[in-house]
Length: 118
Length: 109
Image (spheres, each protein chain N blue to C red):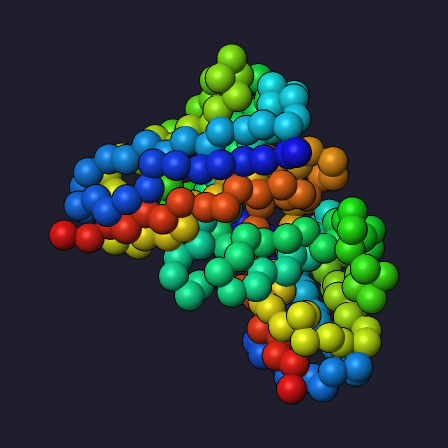
């Protein structure tokens, strides 16, 4: 079945880096754009970044632009989010998501928690 | 950036009744509007896309209306399992950006 599985979350100090991964299965990963969405504890959903199906285009929210980098390896069916210069306000559950059957986010991973704290 | 504003923040409705949730966009998003349901500790689930089309497996009790800047999600014959936070999302403005509303918490009395 269609599945997204995130990994790589954890506790990291402010200013440090972390890389998240999202492993896809059950659909043709290389045919679809992929997104990262985050949710701070007790807060709402916050779109982070998108990458085109072939990796040619990438867009970021203003809050992470210049610090985060989205990438993908279609040979490994895996999406990445490289997070540098992390701040306390980046603390959140990070979800990967995609628009496979519709033009909205119809598939989501289970999320991985990132905590930025000294 | 398009700002999505949801109202009310919290809604308390009795089982069997109908709930109407609102979402307003700061500028037109045409019909590029989705609704998601998120239960505690769970991943968001797509309910409605294109403002009014139900996603696969979503009961007919859930319906969406609107276009431009004003949208509603109506849940009829409320059940206890409908207790959740509901988010609207616009995807008209991307690239470069997609934005979510702040959510409406629906409580079943």
